[in-house]
Length: 397
Image (cartoon, rainbow, N blue to C red):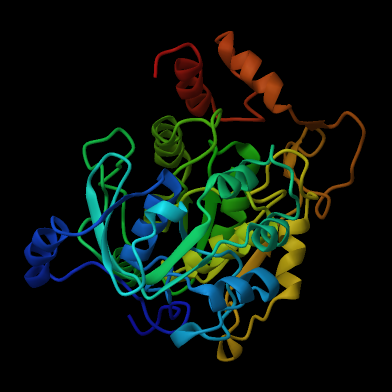
């Protein structure tokens, strides 16, 4: 295990109660005030539970909130001075705030008890500070902005003691066989002898351009972790269960099994573009990855961010881990597509741009083809992936 990259802050901070405490905590929860979390908050709590948000041990207080918004750094505790781009807060309505010093039972949207929280601090949720800094826009049509604006006015801060990891283990998007924690992925990397591991973040099916990025990374690193986000996404995104089927058929036929892993990340999407790219990198560092792929418009939505804003932001943060930096290698890939002249995938770095040469399709065109039962060109997507999406588009999923 010593050969693997250290987690952000030096160690994994997991909040799941010990076996000896579990029953006691559950009994205690029956006598405590109850808070029902939003889907996003429930995802954040699971990420805290498994150590994916290390070094955080609970929801942020006011000092951390302010410094993260303004400087992208943590302000307190063992994480003081560490790069951190997005506040992880528990915002509630004023009439739901129990009071400092109290303990409260946190329940997932489906009613399952998820954790007990000790409230160390309450502070006003400064949305006018968070929204423009994190999202670079205040447009309420932005899904991340809307989510924050819909949250409560008071933030509760304090450590959590979790009693449940996956709150819907029988649900269609539980993926228990692929729901590995950071500790488990690290153990698997160690077992495989991987010292350098590249993570690929995705919330969409993998088409040929994505596949190309992954293959380039595999030429450099010992292993590839395909790590799709399966937490809360916006309406209209392809369901996680459909995407997982796409990943499985693709990896089974077109990737070297001994050099590839598929696991899921139970985080919520914020669609925060550049800042979320940094968060995605930090999380993958906690999972044991040394390298991270940042492609065009990473974690973006609509036209809120420039194509390469999410890459450029990495030039603005500290990278030396001894100074609180990221400590990872970021692969910055430009737009890639199939070139008819080259007979393969190319980028502006590897092949000249020639009008009419490259095969690229809009999302609308692809959706129209799938709805009609038509496969997009094989140069755009693998036929096995297209068939899964056709089945879904025609109502089979």
